[in-house]
Length: 230
Figure 1: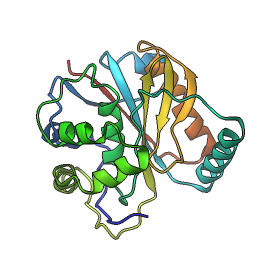
Figure 2: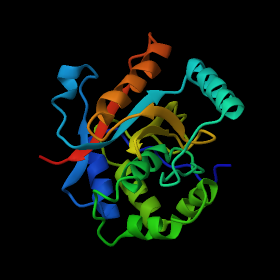
Figure 3: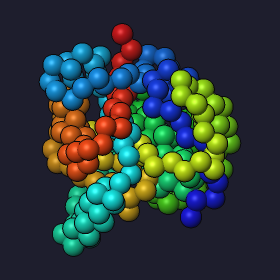
């Protein structure tokens, strides 16, 4: 159960990058807007891209698909790499932080983290299961305090922690030849099939399009990528 309610992070690369840098991510890496999911638009995204984060509205169609997907996987099973870092989300409105941590944690072979709260968290979380990692995040004051500080920044009017939020962040990463969807509200990571570091952006974009197609009348989708800074 969620033990605390935060003000949500804004899907704004400037805010996200300040947050990541506070956690110890070097400014060689940062979040950038993905302006469209067609090949031409994707070609504008700086390379390499090592994670893709989607912000989407939580709708009845999403909840129905989520339940069916979980039932199908429980019935048929799926392979999940033992090298994948996945954690549960216990804190309300912390999905932006969980999504960003998922993106960085699965790419520490690319990102040389500076000493800071995220490196400390990942060291302590390394051998824990997903639920225990979620509990550990609740106690990680450096990460939580950075979230609280940066949630007050951004271009939109800042909501209070009690305001209803119906948007959710998830992240897609490549790990050991497979594209994974990491959503701290789901029962487990979702294996979306084969991918490569070079095709991850395009393959993850196809899954983002599936989210959009389930809510064709909805326009409130935002995609950002964790990429090498230019």
